[in-house]
Amino acid sequence: MKEFITITKALSDVNRVRILLALDGRELCVCQLIVLLGLAPSTVSKHLWILKQAGLVDLRKEGRWSYYHINYESPSELILQAINWTITSNRSSPLIMKDNKRLQEILKMKLDELCQSIPGPTTH
Image 1 (cartoon, rainbow, N blue to C red):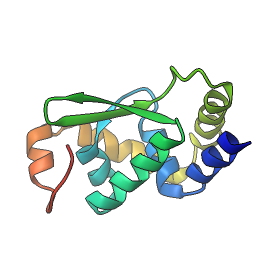
Image 2: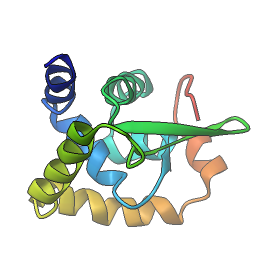
Image 3: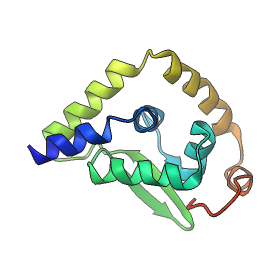
Image 4: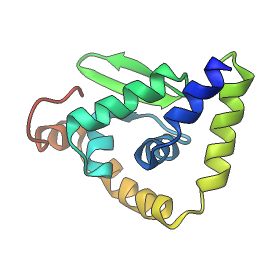
């Protein structure tokens, strides 16, 4: 029951759902998600922490960069069901479709330049 509550709380915020959908089929660094969402770096980091605590996403560190991806390797059937349900239920949402268009432009940008353009401290 605790796992279910943690997962549903993590998915109760539109920006966390947007992050999950942005990570569908790819991994992204924090800077890319900051630009996509238009939120403060600390806010995006908090959202990522909540998703990671729920087991929905995981990260891979490479040098100074932290890349997030959906946790399809989770041994929890509940987590896998929540991921699949969230993605299939929201894939055609106008907001998600707009995010996908914006993400295609963000992915064309050089990562160093993108991260340097973000004011304040960031965890790449």
